[in-house]
Amino acid sequence: MKNGHFLTLGIETSCDETAASVVADGRFVMSNVISSQIDIHTAYGGVVPEIASRKHLERVNDVIGKALDDAGVSAKDIDLIGVTYGPGLVGALLIGVAAAKAMAYACDIPLVGVNHMHGHIAANYLEHHELEPPFMALIVSGGHTEIVNVPEYNKCEKLGGTRDDAAGEAFDKVARVIGLGYPGGPKIDRAAKEGDKDSIAFKRVYLEHGSLDFSFSGLKTQALNYLNQQRQAGREINVNDVAASFQEAVVEVIADKAVMAAEKYGQKRIVMAGGVASNSRLRALMEEKAGAKGIDVLKPSPVLCTDNGAMIASAAYYAFRAGEKPDLELDAIPGLEF
Amino acid sequence: MKEIDQFTRKLNTEEDTRALGLEIAYALEPGDVVALIGDLGTGKTALTKYIAEGLGITEEINSPTFTIVKEYRSGRLPLYHFDVYRLGSGEELLDIGAEEMLDGDGVCVIEWADIVADVLPDDALAVQLAYGENEGERTAEFL
Image (cartoon, rainbow over all chains, first blue to last red; front, side, top):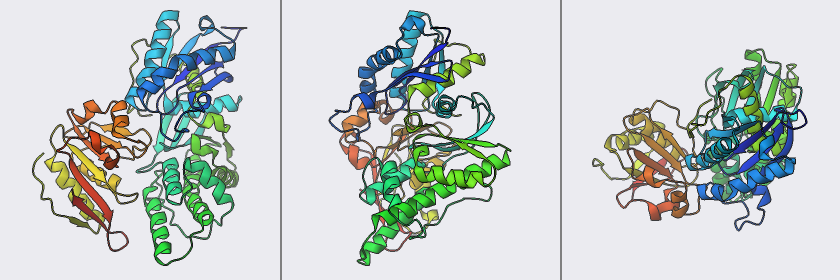
């Protein structure tokens, strides 16, 4: 507790990022440290994922220390620790969980485990200080494409998800085959602005009538087939047109289904989360389609869209406030569901 | 692993892919590794889905590209589904703790296995998937 504010330390190591943050009263970011942003001089330039447990181990203490320093607080000011315990890669998760448990035990601070996906949704509480459930959430990232009904804090009902590739993964893979490189999402977004989204008729995949699930694998194959046909016919490939047409086919289905879910459950707001929530075309199309139905769209700033500790701190704060019991026996659960 | 007839299959329809997946699943025993090799879009994840079906797994199998591995325990044997697309070498696979899965109580299906071939067991079942003559067709060759 500092100056009357309840301070939560959030720790996140579920995949590529080692991250920690101090958040006041579940809403106000006092510090937000993400290891990939400090270590800009890594040999691989961030292309090779730092999923190795030892990378997290090397960094986790420094990242937590910097999060406390940046916030101008010390461990004794922290009222609660929240840590991601799933879903993710087991070795990576364990480092964050072990660090959090050690600190909680040594400093006598309550510890709660946070579902990474609840964290992504909570990123919106940090951006929009008045936002409260109920609302519909759309989580789109390299690993997830999910529509989730949120009736109250930390209560999540998954309504649909991808049956094969996640949206961000589809972007990365198609970006690679058209030579745009990594990271695919932002590169396709940029190229698409120079291209014609109606130039190639990629088929939208909506699955069964009323389904809120997604499938992007077939679209990836459509793009590959198109490129092969063009090459065989000796025709030039317009990368910007491919990017724009492909992107449109992905985001149109996502926007349609998110709006359909909100209508079905009578939600007046859709909150976006995850790395692909930064995609400018998805943002625009969401506003257009939801707006036509009188539904508001909220989204976090890009730094809160990617994996970070602040969103974990916020989710931990609301779980703790809702009466979740602190747990020093916490274990990592790689396949954790909603 | 039980024996599989190792002739090259033509996978002209989804049903052909399913048949191969079920056949591989039937042959699998604890500790077995299936190494899938093939370009983007040749059906590695699709084949894995059908191997999972053959193992009696009821959960939805989706791409593990982001987290490298996903684990499924609802079937006859545990399935560790890897996608090492984002990794650079076999050493990186061991770095994430794959050793106990490779030599474990379940079976491993590894997409993009050529990237990590140096750390896979010699008796892994290697399947090369490729595009067929016509659109929508694939071939599966045992290496």
